Length: 355
Ligand code: FAD
Image 1 (tube, protein in one colour):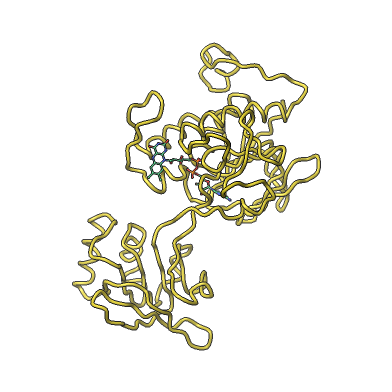
Image 2: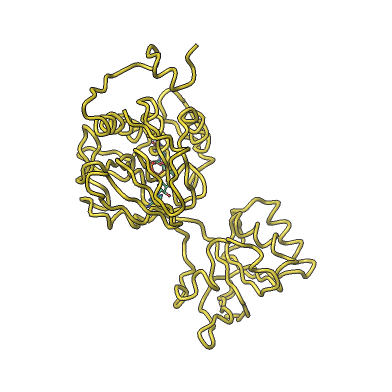
């Protein structure tokens, strides 16, 4: 069986990384796919838009308990992700975080060429799309004209904090990201106005207390309200008007506006890859979990078939069957026999537990 070593797979600069399998999405289904492929001796590259693994579990409900994972009467969502990472550790998958897979096209017999938003390219023989509800995107500011300034003067993530030093900032949001940046940039930015829509914060109480201290010291301002409209001049953003809790409108000068309203999943580029869709999900068969394009598989919340249930458990089962199908695809001449981890010396060697 061909198994490229993902660690050695990167070609010369500009060359695509050559591999057997790329998994799109590092949610629970994508992570378990690494395991099922690993048992069969197949290594994989995994790409996720998020900067960390875990998909919905890590992003939407890390502290909530899950009660329907087999043999774990209760398991925290982040704990599940941590356990999966530990379980797949022996298989040496290569993770590419903070990159969205934006392009996927067929390369004749050779398989597929994938490209990410960061310009990473993969030449791969099989693809597993484990994209869940889609890639996580920041919730936008929601005022007219904001798109035109996105990435230049309106930001939903901080790439280089130094860009904001000495600048007039208006920072929106009541979660940890907003509060962390308010506290971090106070004293470094030229001025900071922090805006949040209500009196309660989702952020850690210690960060909120620190923000209130900074306000009391006159080092920054805080306003309860929402963004109403942008102020512009000569094609540049010059400030933002905030509708305050009492209904009044207040103008703030700003060089940059930072908004941290959390992330939400959006199907995104997956819909453009020419794969048959049904109600925003990829249609698959239930023997291989292959899509309408041979060589492209789909597991977890992203797929649909008669009786589909969007449960973590379903993604795990689908990953197991997709792995067998991929093993056959990569080496059609070789029959893939079912082996038990309990008794298979070869699987135990792959797991690193053999004597
Ligand atoms: P996701 O977890 O959605 O992960 C998909 C990943 O793919 C994401 O990280 C995304 O960024 C990435 N991605 C998508 N498109 C791209 C792209 N183009 N490029 C790069 N990356 C991409 N299920 C249960 O079984 N039991 C429960 O108790 C339970 N409780 C839940 C509670 C809540 C509040 C929620 C929201 C869900 C719950 N679920 C539960 C559902 C469960 O979380 C999902 O079924 C599971 O997360 C699906 O896993 P997945 O790997 O298919 O997708």
